Length: 373
Image (cartoon, rainbow, N blue to C red; front, top):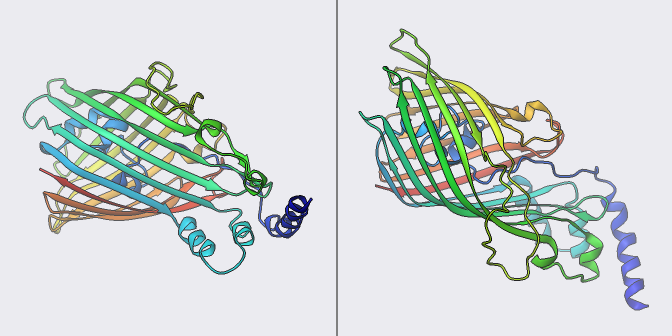
């Protein structure tokens, strides 16, 4: 009886606070890999991607890697603005449940990612480009809804990928590439309520998660448009990712005991775009501007505006790489510092968490450090 009275009291205290926030749910586009360079350029990569971006974007872009590279260390982390604010709120003074209720209507996002080791062989004067790498990414999004439902989406993906690409036609203007990746996924596949937490219900992985593995493929193409301009190159690109549907059912690798469910699939997607590369001017080199449509097939019931990406980057004084872009209509940007053997990158961008742009924007901040030879 005492426990029941305590529960009722807690409900009465939290209800007015929770219902002052709008009801909402997470409908973000899930990606198994998030390039910090692409993030700061508005999400473009099908016509601009280099090195690690080739494995989960357009494999034909392996033909544009400027030089051979072996990546020994590459670590990226990102957090949302709401996560930073909510941590401050929850660690402050006051009743925990009251503080938790005040975070309703926000999304707490975090991602940790590595792409190492990785080896890239650039075509230089040849026709072939290669890449091989091992990737790990864990992303989490946790929100408290007004209905007392907590909808955690946690995805952990790990596995190797290999890319092969080749140039075609007499002028090498056509590039075709394919990536094969073996991946294991451990992810949540259901939500639970705030009441479950208060009542002490067990929320272990066997109840809310699924695991599975698969081997899948990406295909990509690039075509350099025949322009007679020394200061401008236009390139069109197309990619189809997860050709087999990414269902994590084909392999029997399931290392986590007692997790019998299947994780959410990573669906087949399509994308296309065009980029313009400009010649050197006033100390700026490698200037790129791109417009792309991505994630077709991974945006069920969502607005087409969530598929739009536009971005640009340039190199200044050889080592500084400022970037800017519009991801789903939201402004983002970043800066890269290329010290040849050491690269540092920072970025900020916004991801739309609802089906329609402008409803539930999630501002994020990311940083990456890489050591390569």
